[in-house]
Length: 489
Ligand code: NAD
Image (cartoon, rainbow, N blue to C red; front, side, top):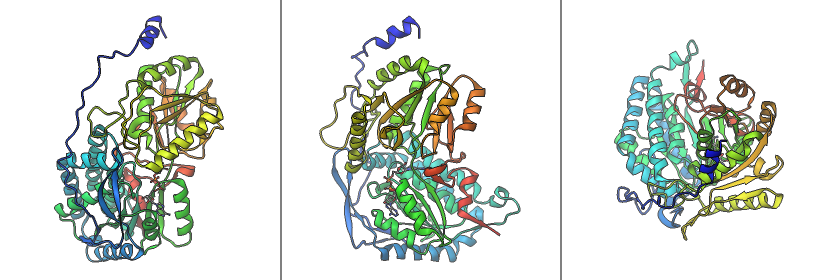
């Protein structure tokens, strides 16, 4: 670090650079008072219901169905009927047309979906508008392209659809996770029953309108809502495949449940990724990568770079740049276009973050939080950095799933690899260095499904995503993402 850089880093953040509020209007979203389950192309009146809320204001948004075993069974029967009565026999080029239509309608209605996603999930509109929506549409476009090319994707293997896929998704990227699940399943000729997370069902329910607009045959996609009980019912139902994205504990329980049943299973579970910064890295870019790695989507990201590994010789400048950058993050209204960090998704998640942060302080780590005024109502957490973290601390071991970074140091590349791999998870990692050979050598040694070099949290439908160890098995995205939805003669 030069003397000039040091001075720049210590200079106070100019106070004249306050942004005026720039709220996105929520008028574009028309919510119903109550939603049922979407079964066989119709709305099924639910027997039980609960309220879904806006986590930024705690205001109720709508009444949502809590699916019973019987309602889940009806959805699975509708999917079975649609599979047998036409969808599986439809030529791939015809299936592709529906997927292309869905992709185009999503693009046309992207502003409406982006507002709804931020309203129900708490994520900044900047992210739902620029990341979730474009990527969700891109997934449908991408898999539409594969639907009539399965024989070329798997030459000499005669790919066949499995039947009905039961799909369960979490709340951190509600529409994007739906796209990751539904697009490859339909491209491969399966039908679907999908259950969104209990706190964020609204974009999946609005997606039913898109299915109708695209004139998808009834029963090809069915949506049932509710909490883990509805998920458990779907796992037990007469489905041919279960695709689950969520926590490692629930993933393990599902794996136990399905053992010996012959149902296919893919699990996309938690993570505790290392973001490794070498002393030759471009530091300002690396600091942006650290910020994007852990504060994107409030840290509610399975592949978040939640463990920062900094080479000892650059520890001081990295931490001072990081703290300075943290002071510029704007926390608040998810619908404000200037917001960087939105609301925590639920009270339960906020309590989990608070508990783990307390444990970090009690175990002896040093906490840093920038000055920050939080809204009075809603669920919020100040972006946080822990230094002086030992590998054994809970904040270095457990997935926090919030805007909390744990910083560790290393001296040699071997030590970086050893520390990065010292986790039960293996979903993702980041490497920052100017040396190409070091990137390749680290990528070979890091035990993680996705490794980013000189960037972080980049996604593309053509690129497979998934984990090792307790982060699960199976891949989503790319040609690999078709395979879990196919059987081969
Ligand atoms: P969760 O496991 O509590 O819930 C996920 C989904 O499973 C929800 O729809 C929930 O209703 C359902 N569910 C809960 N109990 C169930 C049961 N017994 N049987 C069947 N379904 C059940 O997880 P969460 O807190 O909603 O999500 C956060 C977790 O998801 C984090 O651990 C995160 O890392 C992980 N995640 C992983 C990926 C990935 O691709 N690897 C992506 C996003 C999130």
